[in-house]
Image (cartoon, rainbow, N blue to C red; front, side):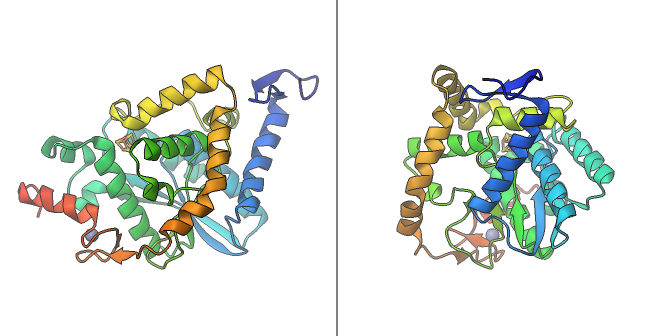
Length: 306
Ligand code: SF4
Ligand code: ZN
């Protein structure tokens, strides 16, 4: 079924085919409905948008920028973390800088090299650890710490439906439901000053939709993938889910929708878990000392940083 007489550019999983104009309208409506349905934004916000320079984060920034221009009480700026991944992050950050300059959005950049003394590439030569494990720990740490310093009320990320679906399955496969309790369109178990709340406006948008939107709006010129991504467990789960989606359209929606029905129960089960503070850095931690400090100690013990 086509939306109108114009040439369709995408087929949704429901079988509906949309032209460029109707798809852009459909996508932006879906993001705004997601924001309303899950109460992602208050009346007044000083919102930080986590920007990697990839298509999802540029898409979410583009839409939130439009929203903020219509509603001056929603102020936005972008925050980017430069992990130090040669040939990849340098390129995506160039794109992030260009976009922010063109759109007149303030961009704050923090790097592993400046904050921890080493780039991710350098850390991986010293520690025998999976790249995404250490990368994610340091990125979340810096994002939360710097967002508090910048007095952001929330951080919006570009996580889409495919990302969420992968996380749900990965946690199931690792029998780690505790981690799933932190998923959902609003990240975290309870509201707490130590955490800047993270929100996911693209929660119900598929990867295919986000890529199409980014492409149609000139936010994507080439596809860049982190060189470490193919080694990750996530990449295996992503490929498996894409195969299933091709054979059984709607699989990803079904997984996320059924998860949303059980999420309140999972959050309830883990709600009393106290949020501790790391004894070394005072950032939130599940244990006495946070993972970022544990890895920094390991790097120090190899006498490569002070
Ligand atoms: Fe970091 Fe892994 Fe993402 Fe690359 S794929 S940026 S290593 S988390
Ligand atoms: Zn710490």
